[in-house]
Image (cartoon, rainbow, N blue to C red; front, side):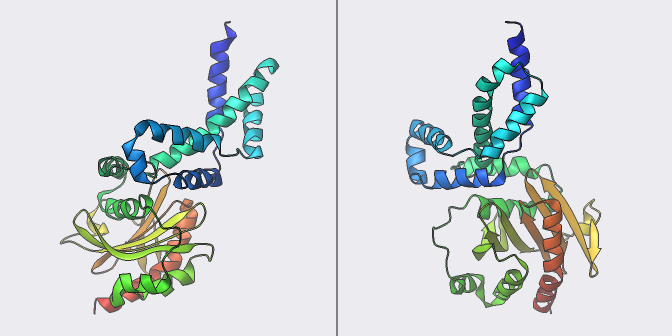
Length: 286
């Protein structure tokens, strides 16, 4: 009897040490999207809970996730008789972890109030001027319910207007072909206007977000130091939860590249985009 509390502690450590694979989260997202519309979720909270449980049960746990958990459990030197009982529970816990990540990102947070609460909680952890771009990315890309068939490029060109449509070929040239354009439009968030292009593949999302400066806004006036300088462009960086951000400014614009890729991948993408985007904006500022 005395060994049970210690065993539970070791199990928790083993589960917490296992990273849920990104594509598992993507499969859970896909399963949930296949359920009924958001309206049905709002109408019946108990039905929503049932769908969540069903979504987890219907996700096949990758074999290597179980292998990782088994390895972690063995490392903790649990008594052998506990191993057959604990591994299935640990694998299920891994699937729940992935589901909770999805929930935290907003795919299951349906009310405007809960969305704003999440954005506010994330934003407090990064410098003030970086919050501007991150808020629009989460509000406009992460919380959006995308159609099954994305619009044609002609629709994106129309939505961006002739003034900003030239950004589409710049982004398409530098972003890997595995990413499809899911959004390109002019939008408004928190009283500001944004130019927003978003792309995604099966497991990652990225956005190029731009907004005109308000009076006195500049990264130079914030207590931020450039993380690097490329082609004469000072670039600023921040990260919170799974979001990585790189940013720079022109005379009139704040420009952000935001993704859930690794910090280095995010940086590399911004380094490829920044000179071309800066040249594009400089022409608008003439």
